[in-house]
Each structure stands twice: as C-alpha cells, then as structure tokens.
Image 1 (cartoon, rainbow, N blue to C red):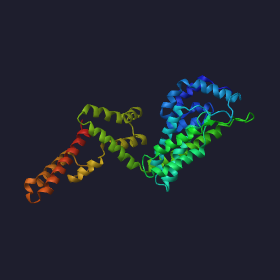
Image 2: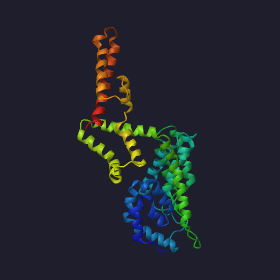
Image 3: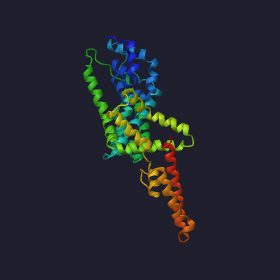
Length: 344
C-alpha cells in the first residue's frame, strides 16, 4: 500500500518525537532513534518538516522495489548533520550509562564503550545508510582505557566512534524482491525490547534512589531561589511555575484528594521546603531542628552570639572568633531560606 504525505505529516505532528511517522514509513531504526532521544532532542524532529515528502517517496519506491541502490556503489556522501548526531547520541548514551550502570564491574573498560558505540551506531543506521558495527565498537574499546575513570570519557569515546563510523559508511543492502513485509507486531516487539533495554537501567537507578534524586533537585531549586532572593518578584514567579502543575491538577479534580495529587504535593513539598545540605549544616551550628521557626532560630542565634562573642572568650580568642563567624554565616543562610520559602 502506498504511503501518504498527509498521513506522514499528521503522525509527524502528533507523534513525531516518538518516531511514529518513521514507523509508518518502515524506517524502524530511525523510529527507534527518535523514540530514545525524543526526536533527536527536538532538533531532528523540527528539521524533518521539509523532509517528509522525500521520506514518503523513498518508502514508496522501496515498496515498489525501484530503489536505485546497489551494494557495490560508492559510499554515501558525508553528512555533517549525521556526524554531529552520532557524537551527540553517543555522548547521550554514555551519560545514561554513567547514571544507571556505573556500579557494574569493568564499567569503564566494557560497559561504557559498548553503550557509547551503540548510540553512535544507531545514528549510523538511520535511513538508508549503515556502518561497520564491529569497527565502531573496536574504536570505543580502544579509546575507553585512555580516559579510564573520567566522567568526561563519553565525549572522546563518542568522537572516536563517530570518526570510525563515518569512515566505514555505506548504503544498506536492498531487500530481496520476493521478501514479504515484516508484520507490524514483530516490529513493535523489537522496538519495545530495545526501548526497555535502554530505559530499564536508568529507571531502576532513578526510582531506587528516589530520595537522593529529590534531595539533589531540592538543592538545585534552593540554589536558584537563593540566588534570586534579592529579586522577590522573580523568585515568586519561579515558585508559581513550579507549583503550576499541582494547581492545574487541583482545578481539574476540584481540589479533591487522590494518589496523584498527594504524590505531587509531597514531591513539591520536598523541592520547595526541604533544607539544602548547606542549610542543614547551618541548623547544626545554631543547635536547632529542621522544624524550628524563624523566631526559634533567631533566639538560638542571639544566645550563641553572646556565648561565643570574642570579648567574652579572651582566653580562647581564636576558637571564639571562628565560631562567631560560623554562627553569623549560619544565621544568614537560614534567614535567606525563610525569606525565600515562607514569605506571603
């Protein structure tokens, strides 16, 4: 059955970042690439606005067995966009491996280079081109020990793999004329397995370390709002945007309860009210708990300032001076926290 441009554009518009239009056109490797990178990080999806008609034409010629491609033809021309995509996706796969698989044995020698190589090769086989997987992975395995243990190692590994893949680029072998189209169910099954293989380690890592993840996000949000405490209106606007999904949920559900609402409320409570690591240290210096009010913090601060004032500790002036400075800094830190999160 001939593919339609209108249908392809509709799938591109409503499911493009998930690769639905590529799945419709039989470009499964491209569909998988889009599925794992959300449309090439959005950039590739936008670029396809003017490429859909050519994709549809290629798919129809392939179905009619009129594709002018020969296994002995010269290599396809070098594409800057494809080469950049290989580097970016290889780096992306390596970063995901660093997050979700770094506890495995021989991670930097085997796991990381194989993940980066898989990302580079996935870009290499998008469309009608392909490359030599063995040589791409060999380049990754050779480069990885040079940057062993470095968090930046995915970048040089991805560069080496991309150069190797570009050097050995070629057109894909045409399908035999008597080959039947592969059923959609089996294609979706393979894509699903590939998606699970990619997302399962990352998902396990995120959910297994939910508390650590939320505390990390909390620290990031607190740091941003802390930097904006001189601009209360900007901080309030950011806080409003962070709480907007919860408010929309309350509007839609009529403010009722429910697991989703309660979960979001708890998550945002952690993100917007939880003390950062620095603020927890400040609480210890002022000898107050996390539930302490601003009045209690101020009272403890005044008492400690009197106890550790250098004029009252002349026999241990150095220690008193250091403690006095720590108390001042701790109070200023907690004061900023309460100004940022407890203003009306």
